[in-house]
Length: 375
Image (cartoon, rainbow, N blue to C red; front, side):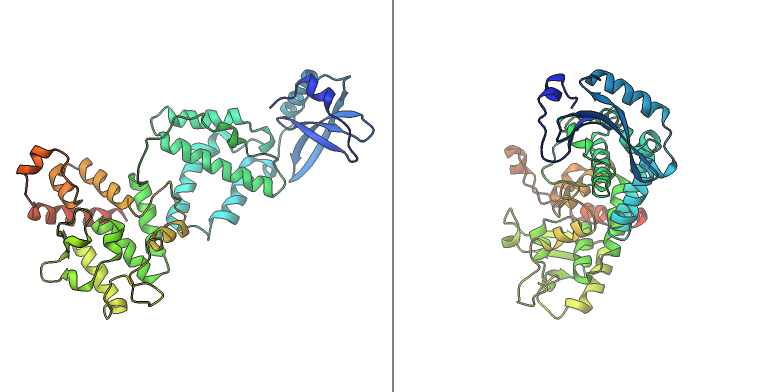
């Protein structure tokens, strides 16, 4: 926020030199003697260069800003000082090797498509909150509001890295809180775009925990509730019919549920059987205490892969499948029955007892094929 003349006058001297920021690289330096000087901070070859713009009050705040703009306009940053350079360093030190390759790829796509063209060649000190907002608003205007928020988050992460490495003082994205349209509310965050789902699957494939990796794939193939997945037992698998038969006491609606298993899911649990087939649970606790996998295990795995809680939760596999299946023309009754949702229309619920098992079996295989083709 720009300083007022009153704020400049009321800034009292201290035992040591200190500064207050006016924004855009302009600061007012207050010395123990009480003298005050306007300073323009410019980054050159990775080092801060300070240029004096006059003393206060001889040079007013307005005049100092004009001189600062003139200086920065005439200054051409080298490639070492550009925002692109900071982005590249951030990718090398904070993304590559730390996040799942697929998720890192999504970040790079967003950087290359939305951020680098507008901000990449600017010096980081010449980037303002207004310029960042302009980038995000241009995305927002295309209707992909969630992506606008994601781009703002990425820019914020780069700025926080710049602060840690001494090239910025503030995260300019913090000033944009509430400036963008609110993304559609989702009770259980999920991913529904192809690129995002592809990145998720690639992250799942690369995950090192064997049992948890199988649990992730079982979750996405069956899109059952997380508690139902965690408590799945080998005795519930009907290998002859390629079905998972969940007892009513385990279901939210307390009625037995049949889950047709696609060939990809069968392959997954056949692979899993060599690791946990001798136990009660498909996904036993790693503590070997006779219990099934804990409720946070899959959630932690998603975080480890680089997907934040606002990106996707374990329950989000259900929303993902529902969205894709609806978009591809599968009957809503068939989808809702597979999701084991209760019919909200009381009259309809009284008459519709159809299981749609044949259609559900066909749909589940289509879902498995779609995921396989995508990855």
